[in-house]
Structure formats: C-alpha cells, structure tokens
Length: 475
Image (cartoon, rainbow, N blue to C red; front, side):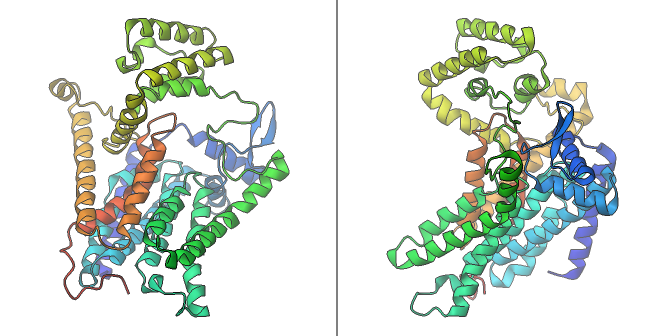
C-alpha cells in the first residue's frame, strides 16, 4: 500500500483513539479483576487474588492479559496512560494486519486499492478504537486473532495448498505444515488471553473438511488438523502445568463462569434467563445483580420472561426469596432450573431457535456505545430527541455506522464468495456468533474481535470483480 496513505491513516488512527481515551475515560466492571491479577503477579509473583485474608493462586481468568499488563507495569510504569498507550499501538498494528488480509483476498490488480481502503476503514473504526481506552482484553485479543486469520488466509490462498502427495518434497511439506502449526501456535497465545479463541480453529477445521473432503486429500486434512492442534497445545501447556502444580488439576481454560474454587454457580438461574434474555441491558437489571449481591426488581424484568400472569407471580415469589438474602441458594436454583425446563418444553422453537437468533441480532446490530456515556435509547424518537439531543444523535449515528459496516461486509462477501479464504472468514463469524448466543449474558463486545474481518469484507465491496487476468489464488 502507498506509504503516504499508511502514515496518514495511522496518524488519524492515533488521534481518534486518543480522543476516546482522553475524552470519555471508558471503564468496565472486569477492569478491577485484570488489574488485581496483574499487580499480584508483578509485585508478588503470584497469579491470584486476595481471598479470605491471603493471596491465593487462581484460574478465574486466563493469564495472557494480566501478563500483558504486568509487562507494561515493568517497562512503562503502573498507570492507565501506559496501558492505553500500548493498546493504541497494538490496535494500529491490527489495522495494518487488516489491510494485509484484504490485500491477500483481493484481485491481483486491485490489492493496493483494497488494502488502502481496509487500512482507512480499520484506522477510523470507532468501535474498535474506543476499546483501546479501557483495561479489557478486546484490543489484545483482536490483534492476536487478526494475526492468526492472516496466517490462515495466507495458507488457504497459497498454491502450495493444492499439492498432491506424489509431488510433494520434504521442503514443501515442511512449509505446508509450518503454516498450520504457526496458526495453531498463535491461536494458543490468543487463548491465553480469551478462552474462546479456539473457535477460530474450529472454523478452519470446518472449511478444510469441506475443501479436502475427497479421500485423496485426507492426508492433507489430517496433517493440517494435527499441526494446528500441536501449536495450540504447545501454547497452552505452561498454563495447564501451572494449574496442575498450584491448583491440583490440569486445566487448559479458565472456568466458564469465572468462578473460584468453592463458589456456587447458579446454573439453573442462568438457564432461566436464557429462555428470555436477548438484550444487553437485561444483564445490568438481572444477571449482574447476582455478582454484586444486589436485589432484583421484578418490574425490571421484561414481559417476554413471562408467558402468563401466573408465571409472573411465580417468578415474583422466586425473586422475593432471592432478595431476602441477595443469594441464589441451591434450593432456589433448582426452582429456577425447573422453570427454565418448563419454558423450554412448552416453547422449544422459541428457546432453541428464536431466542439465539434474537441474541445474535442484538449482539451485532447495536449502536456499540456500551463504553460511552450515552443511554443507547432511540424510542420513542421524539421523546428521546427532546430529552437529550446529543445522546440521541450519538446513538443514532453509531447505530447507522454499524449497519453500514455490516452492509458493506455482506456485499464484499457476496462479490468474492468463490475466493479461497472468504468461506473461512464467514464460518468464523458464524461460529463465534452462535457460540456467544449460549452464554449467560448478551454483550456487544463479544463480536468486537470480528470487526477486522467485517472491515476486510467491507473493503472488498469497493473493488470490482476479478478480471480475466487476475489469478484465482494469491501468489
């Protein structure tokens, strides 16, 4: 890509990110956990938390991001400014990786154009930019995921992937398995930051199974899966060994509910919320009340959580029981689980199809102002505008921009649907989205990691279809 565009885009990217960092000072509840883990690791050499009056080893979070913070503390000092500065730099590198992926997927004659468009889209994307200002895993995870995607896209679009068993040499075989091993290794490093990162390998595995479905290609499929798995396990082995040594169990991932040993997890309560919860705001009014031991207001629960007045009264009794001690006891949890089972049995299509689809919709199609001081309310329009025109304008503008990004991505994916690499990107988006419809809350930040892919596809939308002289695969 032209160096002038590279310098200008990165400069604008720096200014945009520092605007969010300095103007909004974003914060989120998980910040305190990551900072505590990083402090204890840096100052005391223990990856753990202060519990019951002592510092104890913990596996409630993966160690990658606390290690990232500890490294910053050791080199630049312990301050939010140091962390956000590094995250700004990391995110700008992600912008360059996004441009490289776009160039790899574009027609040969349009690679500079598409790479330049992707670079500008990534540098000026406010949805990834505003996460550089908060001490959360999103910026680092997005960088590592994008790097892994670049490696896999390179592998999928390289002519060496079409080799036959008879013509392969030892050097070519080494190069072939090397790309998959490198991809698995990078995904493993990403897993040390966010435990769902192996979804990328699942997407790759699905695409390879389809591509190499013929028996003559099964040897390539087996090698690819074997070496991706080897890279993943190699990256995670030190963490598993640490858990075996300090916690008495071999564990490669953090606990699903980020609980500590001995914590009681109200799975029945979460199962009940999954039969109706589809919006981010419901987490504040219901789910996250449990962790903060705060009472739940029955009126804050949406009407979709009840199929009848009798059911509403039943939930009211359960909520009142919880509010007495702000605790979900095992007995109360069983009652919520029973209610969840009944709702699922009565409306299986709603529970297992419509609810996940709605969750996916509200995860993707949102103004993405969860870190900004705006309410996100647009309805009723006249009332929202009258109450706070600035809030309304920011929410509407971000919402429209989000639709534009997704719309461009759909156009780009359709135009280049036959291009090697595009099915992999789409499969990744689909699998990650489906996975996060099954967690206990609905959070728009779960798909922030996907935005480099969205922007790559969006950049392709502006490129003309491949000409006759363009190769079907990247050289």
